[in-house]
Length: 450
Image (cartoon, rainbow, N blue to C red; front, top):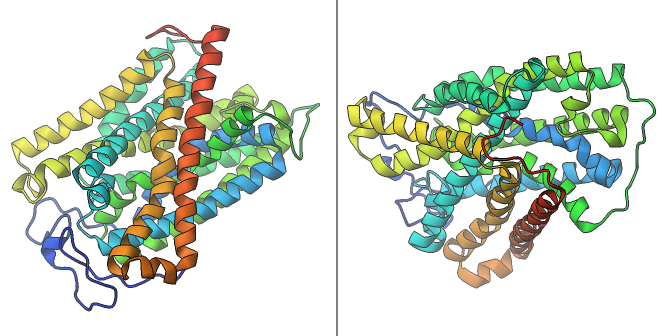
């Protein structure tokens, strides 16, 4: 995939490839920041890579060994590696679309280009909903970690509340630059926790254990396992927002390559090693299968990652609305009372919604699966195909261009179909799991301690 040098354009228009025009200050989301009190475009590609890793490589990886147990080690590893490569391809398309349309700040802006006001509202709502649910998922990961560390001495809902407070505080910085520095220890924590988890599994392997090369199973069970690695890579919905705060957006693909290379390699090694030493009975999250002391150590070290990942998600939901409210206004770039008041309220609302959903909805874990099926399947994979087809049709010469670039056209259509399949199949198996859980009586009461 050769990166093309895209020219910049005013909102709603992009010149044909080969045009020598360049971005003007007004094209950019944040404009000329030279004299502004709050400067957004400060991120290097290295810090963007750290942000991407911090929000994507998190609690989702702890479900990967159990996926290998369901489908077998060979199919499981193939799926993890393939999805990592696929995610790199869709990252490239998303970044090229952003470079061609510098006015795009988030998926909602991209939706406006694709489908007008309806596209904007649908993709904006999807981003906010998924970000809130992802924040709630991190709160539950923190709840589990705190419960393990304290031998579940307190009500689980209280653990969630305790974890929600620092998540809210870390969400408050107005710029991603501040969060990027917090993301460095976050990345270190999940890397070290993963290594400790693998070492503990190797030192204390489960005996006897069963390791399956392949496993024959039904579609529902297999696809539940497949969704784990699909959603472990789900973070592309934040890419436009991150790239908008880069000093040089043209370097964004370097960050994406770093993310996908690290995530694919780390996920593969972590899943194989953990599964090999624990076998088919490995739990999800996999740290729960370790001896008690090692589980405490691994979960404890991973806590900074859960905190920062949750903060990044809630920050993203708030930032989408904040920029939409105040784009090109003094409140976006200055320390005004109205600007800060709205920002703090938005951050509070996003974190509060995540907390209430996490502790008040008995089937919240399943709702995360539904939200991921509805939105992550598209944001991480499917919608990239639509972006490429749109730009090729409008700025390369219509249907003739689509025929000329037959390989990319085919890949883009297949990407759209893959997103649709994951969306529909993910919804089906998640709803089926909810019905089975209710039938088995395993659904807890709202706001319960259990």
